[in-house]
Length: 251
Length: 267
Image 1 (cartoon, rainbow over the protein chains, first blue to last red):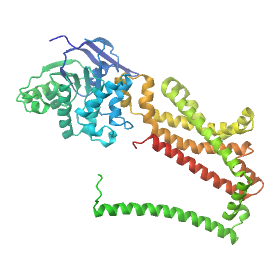
Image 2: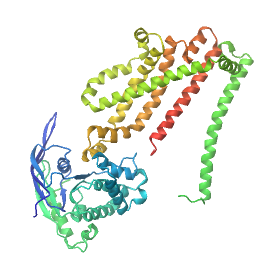
Image 3: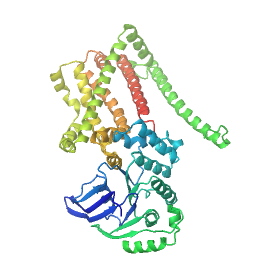
Image 4: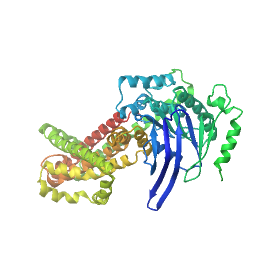
């Protein structure tokens, strides 16, 4: 593998409360290459989101190292819901990250506006979020994340708030946008179909405390590697069954 | 959506809405007119003693008198000015204190029991102390208005701040927002609806404070007119003052409602 853009070494996180402490993540080690799409799956509550929060700098690890190949790396974080601000128009919502990072230059704003046009929301620039459908809002949320031009995208179950049909469409949509923009992405999800159709590698975590149980390299025979095509690849079901077994879900 | 040719059903629907709206306004007006006429007739026919209940024509006469004497606007202006100053002061002060409480959870925890006690204390009880401290005059009245509305403003605005969706704050943190940016980009704009609601309550309480204050100390103002009128048993003056007061309070409330509309266009 070429030099990783991000290497995580023996990441460990302990949560503290009055009632005691919980070991959430133990010795999480992973190298991520440029342009890779990594998906982390695991039983619910295992600490998948914690990994992303630490990478994003929202939480501090109890121990371990996170190294970026470039010190000035920009991260983009996408959450479960779109969290567009109802008091801002779509355009102003997209500018949010630039404003906060004091990078709202004419050039950057024009680039952000171009993203809106490219990804089909041009007509809705001056609309308020409430006037858009769930799928469009999620796309606007992705554009807001892309507007700061991040090298690495962190996606925390970005499609789970959508209904099934919209989710399929938005997964395709957003998956192809991320590939087109050539971003490195780390996504957390519990939806295996979504995971296999998007990922280059899938990291399976155990129950709490989360340790890496297995890593799957996903190689699908498909024509254009869009999520839709990937779902129809002959290897798809095998991966699905194998990963499902690894997840070891008991109800 | 801009089609001009609506279906018949739609036209009927719009018509029904309009009729409904008209009925509400008409009933309101009729109620008011009926009340005034009944009041007038009852007084004329001496079913009620107009010396203690006054009557619309006498109210009107008093109003004209006050106007020609030139004292009407003096009293109205005094009270409105006191209310506006009291309202503005407690809004700004209350919001600033709410921001401090939001900024420092430590201060918020320390202040909590004090705020609870201050909130349940009838502020009117402090009236005599205020008189001693700041003297009998307009300042005492404004202090009274601020005291009455301040704690409510603080708790209203602060609860708006704490109700802001935590995930929205997380979102701006992922962009690397500072605490000041979290306040200005998320917490304040997200709280505009709660803040304007607090303002609506606040404006009412400011009137209470000012009238209470004027009862206690003043030499001018609508509260003064009410007290003076009742002391000299001129109920016409009392009723007239109350009427003016209602109108002034109504206008002020509408102004706040207008500001709310401007502040929250996405509603």
